Image (cartoon, rainbow, N blue to C red):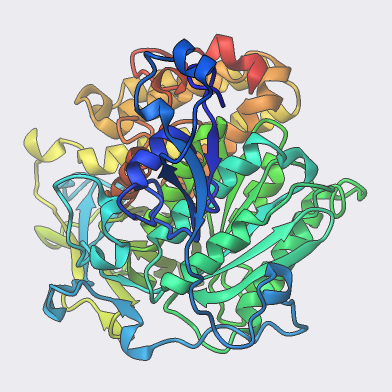
Length: 636
């Protein structure tokens, strides 16, 4: 390119692109690493001053800066050594066998990634449990129906060491975090609609994921269009593994149709056939289209969704596999109902990536949680103490709940918790008249879970016994409703309204849907926790208003409203953060369930890529819709 006439672009093998004069200046001292994702390059641009400028051009450009006078060339670095027998061609390098039992062996001593400067006793994996009765006292001669008791669980922080001083990308994640190692399979849509910018952004997001997995973590990549192929086997993310994974991802080419079922089937096969298992397992599924091969040709769509998910990864299946699918619907043309159903059936989450440049942040939030699991196989047991008590209800969202015939005992299968992640379950009982004592024991709550570090089952040492006072008369202070209980009732009320509004919207009755959301918003504003300025209640109000905006017309609802509502329902039913538009932003009120590990990873994502701030859509709590929503409706 002639100086001052334009800028030549260098596209690296890790898919990141740079101006030649920028990157050559950055790499002139022999640095072989990408400044964005830290991938080690085999070839990169380098300066060369042996370049004769024609006389007429030299005069024309006499004021051109020295940087503009550099020419560039590609310098090939020596190839890294790879395992014997692997071919140079990617497709020959990772042939797809009949059985996926070629997963890389685990280093058992390294199955938990430790910070080299931290001692083992700094790895914390415990659980805190608290209980809150609706009120502290009920008069002896009074009864209370549907008396609420909140069970609050919070996982302890992981043993990670924070880097407070700047860009976390300067250190490999294994040097910063201590976490239970993960087997991660990414199932990626590479159909024709993903061509161009979408595919480039997907590659960049995958590069971020690869660079933030530790050497004890394993990754496999499935690509699907009309058919599905395993383009990268389950490999440890060592330096060599990362390099090979980056090459595999950057070989992706978009073409063909969309066969989500086949991609998910092949992704599940990686887990079923593997010889070794890391403590944590998960699938990340991304698609921007509708499955034309497995769903649309059949009449009973709801039944088809069950068929799409292999039985071996159904939530609470008999095989013992717990493989949640975290589904990401990309853009306005994906099948949100299908993707949400897949996540619900498998025990994962559904995220709606509305804007293309948010895909990396959305992936970052997800792996920020997956790389911080500190509690596994968590079960909560609730038992009535007083002989006249029965459990009226157990509100556990999407978590499996079982209740004995006499309604005296219940159990909740919670599963995994990320570091500092919280769960709240509201149970109700009918409190009878009882003048026999000044105190009544209502419930005993226990929790049992597996520690992913020691692999041992842990029973919380102390049982939480829920008691209330039974005085003759109750004072005003004892009648104050617990704000913790009220807050969770509001969450359940809002989630129920969202579900009802969605049903109305699917019937094309948008006026009824908006009315349901508006009535819920009004009811929330009159509650104790809302009047106290509770942050969750404020977030719920913002969310309800945003859903009303996305139901302004049937076209708007089908383009973005349906996906936004389903992502919200997924978040509230699992009490886990999902991406909605730009809501991975840590300043967004919608991220009520975001953990510190998720925030850290999203921050890392936002500081390792160049974005155009004016193009980012942010949610202003003072408004009922995202900034620029009117301008973007036609672009979603």
